[in-house]
Length: 138
Image (cartoon, rainbow, N blue to C red; front, side):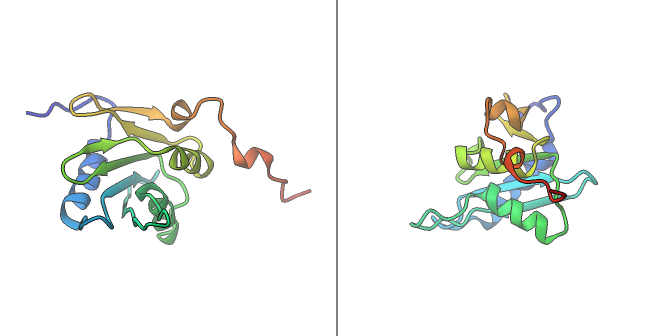
């Protein structure tokens, strides 16, 4: 029996788990990501592995959300195929998530020890790309 971790968006975890179980095939698609928009909508995506370093599921999620008119995500989670469960974002994805959604949260942990952390907790002392961009008014 799996316990529900308080403060974790379990519907989001289930969405990513369902996607990776039903759509991941072979080595090309091995991780699913899901994100929740402020209005409650859930967006999902799969990674696109390629020997040139194709995008992680979290990066595909950013583009998929934008294609649906969603430019902010409150919470993001990634789930691995072969019942690997929730997996943390890699360094590149942590930086991209911080740049696109600086107030977002990420579900991390394993098994019954899932928890939700601010993206800033996963990338402390981080470089914030938008802080170094010129204002449009200048």
